[in-house]
Length: 121
Image 1 (spheres, rainbow, N blue to C red):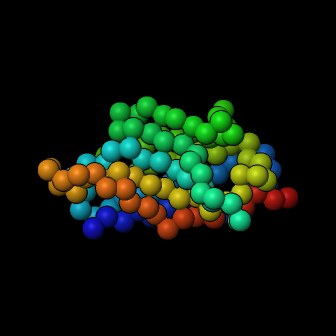
Image 2 (cartoon, rainbow, N blue to C red):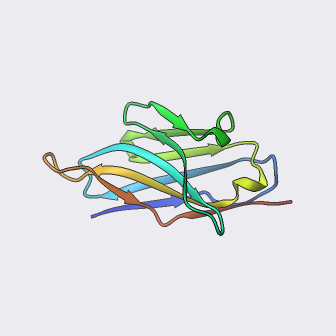
């Protein structure tokens, strides 16, 4: 079994910054792609950023230039540095990771429980 635990959410003023973390634990043979999603109240979950094991990144247009995704493979952790936050960035942020639990296993997508980000003055 694999667990993903997010942290770092909270209340921040517009223009401020937050750094989210998502640590994976459990029966992990290999962590492949890791992603951040978010879901605002009354809206569908949307992709925010993704990073491959090798460090290639991809961002949603609405966060490009403001958010940075990174990872520490030794710690099985993915980060999301969020700068210049806007009220429309407020949402529950979820991490997702493709995890291989054995050498011959097929990677499976696991989700964290989410962390709330509120952007308000």
